[in-house]
Length: 144
Image (cartoon, rainbow, N blue to C red; front, side, top):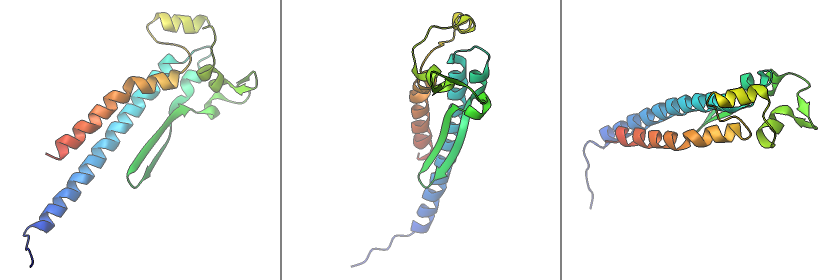
């Protein structure tokens, strides 16, 4: 017994086009949110001289089959040599440690920014659900 299905080649081609559109739009969305996360992390980073704020951004972008990754963090090369405190790289201490905010950081906080430790994590958490909803909507729209 055999079954003949007509139009299967067209269906497969449509599915491949849909897959390419979902991947393209998802990649664009991830890039957009990576930029937002980096910007918010910079806004939330403590400030003394501005080096830490200005060193936060997208560090790398990698693509593998079924996976697209953007790494957001502190570019230690932009901090320059000698940025250590208590034996730790300055940016690690400022992200992970507890400390009192200095004058410029307090001014930044008073201007409405959530300045302090975990600035990278908090920025990620803030946009995580929005990104996931956007990716879900892309998949739904493109598969209708």
